[in-house]
Length: 132
Image (cartoon, rainbow, N blue to C red):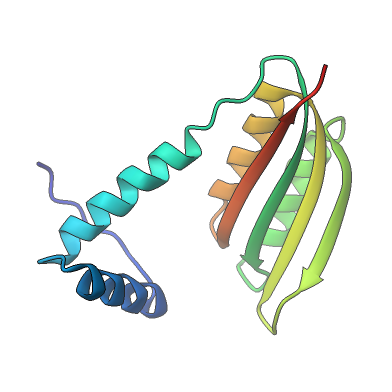
């Protein structure tokens, strides 16, 4: 096993600790390993090689340094995949966007992976529907 150091905000750590206590985990490492495995399985979703339609839903902190600019650049570089985007203000710091995408599955997955991985994006999920 490897020992690593990660940074987790206080609210998320409190949720992890509460889930660990509720489920009977002996320590944080055990629950974090299980959550990581579950997350990897969930994100390993297969995308069609051909055309697809998709919805990319993500929540981000609009105060995160340069994040809005980086997100805009991502979508401009993939303008051929983006059909429309809905922007919702959740609170003083967080926004949710739902982007309708269409195009080759691997390209849609590539764009969504890059958006979700941006620092300051708190949550992201891609839903893919194959097209004939």
